[in-house]
Length: 467
Image (cartoon, rainbow, N blue to C red):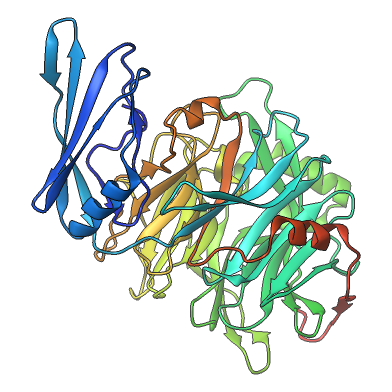
């Protein structure tokens, strides 16, 4: 069957897990059976099983915290036979209703169009947040605490800038020349109209002959603090020999986590030589996980402290995300670098921040032999959305996984589609899947107006408190 929905834990409010039997010409009947009812669906002429949405919803809601037995009956030349039954475990906790993602061609394919889309996970409805047909890059959509009332996204190229939406007010801003690498990977403060960005100068290189097709590396990166209410930005960390990237706040706003690679040799090189060094030594760049305490009354950060030394074990961390209850730190771990979406050994790892010395461990049940990366938490901390290349090694797909109260991930499953053939036809990758409790209120037309309009307020560089 495709997708593989056998023996998974799914939310009771998810859209039907439609699938296809990969045996041409065979008729199939699927039966879901539980203590409080059952549901049956018959395949069409192409082997697709599609459950009636109303009946599916009713059955799953009746079995919250319980399980369903799934039986598949296949008819071939010898008559009917039953395949091995499997279980569908229905979690008691719902998943956030919306998933926002970017659709983009793989990095080794030239693109003309790309867009940001939002899927209603309880149905199959998809909304276009923003879409461009002008060879412009749109990326890094981000919400404040899984709430779309404060959101932002980047647009690069013609009329580029950072679009910030703050409780109904939307504007495009451009960062001053004192932040020479711009504003790259964002992190909203959990309560205030503040963002921390890593300001990255990156390059993309292509392997001539290698299982991993693309490398994306930092040449330089710092951390900057942006106060959207006052339209001011300043450096937090500005170092030539340390590459700081992928910031993320703790849920109480008292701590900022990020990853950093210490590269003393790059601190003495010109920009041209830094690029050459990164190209030559890309397998030696490894990032640890650090944090800084934050005082919101003075908007100042403490000194950096290393939480997890990944580099000493020959590994590199990226994309730190703290669970909404503040207990778990989720990140990706691979052999080197910080852009793990192209690294086959990239897996999801977690550590318990309540431990005096957090001990990292992989989310073994959710990981695969291909790249697993770009993850986000649900607002209740029970679900993880992430992108993975596990299906064919070329395209990333959006997957969901249950994260239980014991800190264990369950088997991950593909984002369901109304037509199980959707992923066979789609020649684009799902990128940066972000869960949210509510839908983006802006229409596509309003977002296009914000992107194409002129900036409404200049950002002032503030050198105060800069390191």
